Image (cartoon, rainbow, N blue to C red):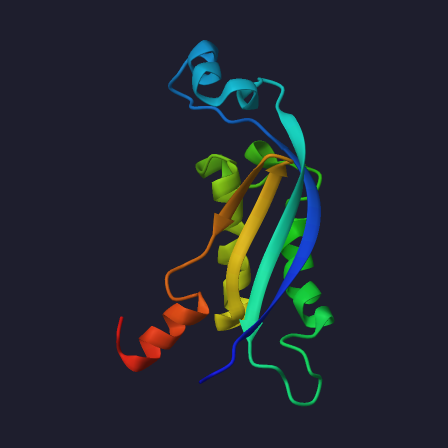
Length: 151
């Protein structure tokens, strides 16, 4: 049986946003997005949890060195930190800056540098809501099935 180990690390950034569909009135947008459609925007302290997996390195005893993970993650989050997402980040001019899309944005930018080790992303927007993102095949048991040809 093959072992699998994961590490979860938590990061934080602050950002503002407004959720708004251009073809609708302010009143219609408020019905859909509630206070997230405030014309002046509003902000959150986001917490991002990344689950990284792989084999334990026989030399370091770790799945990934903390510095290596930080070098991949911090530049991505710095592009969001203290920004008005729907105005200052080009991606969110085309995609609503929802928690779901923020999680996908982070994944798309981290996956190439973390290769197959990125398993799961969780973005907490408030104390009572969070959004999770992963792709098919990123969980260890799915990788095992793929290796056996049971896709």
